[in-house]
Length: 115
Image (cartoon, rainbow, N blue to C red; front, side, top):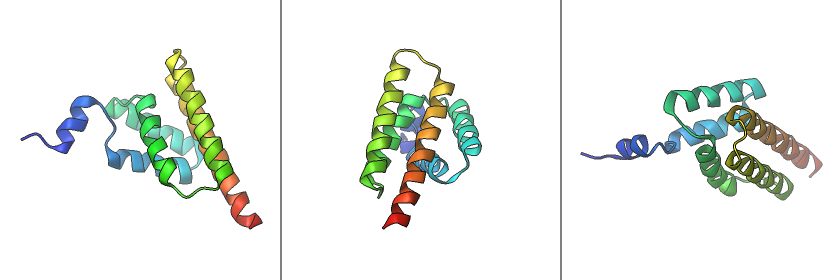
């Protein structure tokens, strides 16, 4: 029987549960832990950073963020996707993704304190 796990495994697309783990690491873990965990998952499961970005974008669009932080994240993720499309290092761009989330989370904390 072909199940959901088989489809994700065959296509190489990230499992939804993996995306939520990644999103949690991006939002809550320290930079180095988030980077290491995501990189390990990429290598273990053969995930492309561009696929991760696409799926994380879907989560970001539904997550409650101040407009400034959401716009910043969307712009950064778009720039990183463009960089990946012209052959830049996956590992280096992962650092950009983690960094963008850390800045956005700082913007979110600043936003909530100011209100």
